[in-house]
Image (cartoon, rainbow, N blue to C red):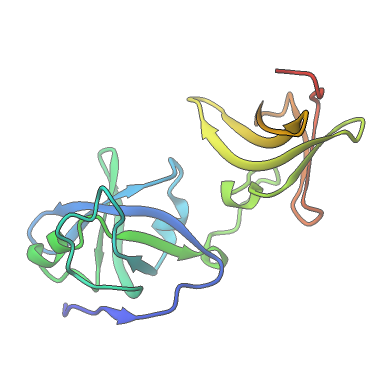
Amino acid sequence: MSTTLTPAELPADAVEMGRISDAWGIKGWVKVHAYSAGADALLSSSQWYLQPPVPPFDRGFTAFGGTVQVAVTDIKPHADTLVALCSASPDRNAAEGLKGARIFMSRSEFPQTTDPDEHYWVDLLGLKVVNREGVNLGVVRDLMATGPTSVLVIECSRDDKPVERLIPFVKAYVDRVDKAAGLITVDWQEDYE
């Protein structure tokens, strides 16, 4: 396999999925540190967009500048990580040179979810959150993994000061996610801390 680093534009719907953490083996495979525990999108992808690392992972990185597109020829789970073979790393030396590179994918390339209650985190960011009474509780700014469940991090204001509200993302509290309307309805009161 020859080294192929094709300069590319990062798609408008690009999502940072992880980074290359190290070389694996002698044939050009790389270890991938995925940012999500569910790596279905990465496992189903045939192409990635790579960008150089940012601190603290940028020490000595010289493999490329800007954004490049690479073909993913094989990817699989291995122990507690993923390992992949891509057109940018035909041998171990090339794979070592990619250490720290950030991996992006186009959101449109993610596999479709089969369960209506299953959502990609990236699709929840920016959605307005209201309770059953229609009270605006804020906007989803982040999600946190807290072991068996995820928690919505809601940005809101109280007394004209920005504050965070945390709501467990479980059926007991989340009534409905309507991505088309940009709205999440929850069983949560405004004064819950």
